[in-house]
Length: 152
Image (cartoon, rainbow, N blue to C red):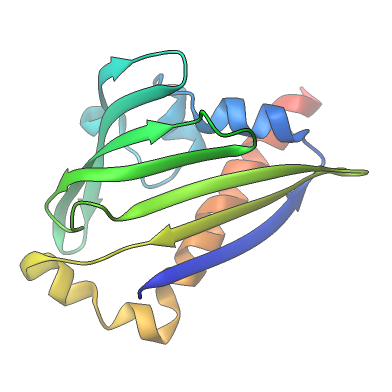
């Protein structure tokens, strides 16, 4: 199973991390380097869910996914792929944040099943650990942006 699991820590409280993770405004593109405003579309929102299309240009071409985000479980935001040009429906990514005495412990767990021509182009990166490095860098970027906003 193509699972990537990364962990980081931040002085930002866990609830603030999760609130920012489910911010689907244009701020999302500032927080996550793999989300571009031009490719961000919110289709539906509720008290504990949102359906959103996100995407960006990659070296292999435009990549997008429509996700159903759910945050009904405390401490977790989970996105499940509904459709995508690179990931199979049912693929997931989730962010978990737990309170620590210094802020929060933040985990990202991605279970990503690749599909199509673009997916086959990326398949070799999973066993090489490049996907894990990329996700770890994206998580650190996200947390750094939150930390900056707390300091301001």
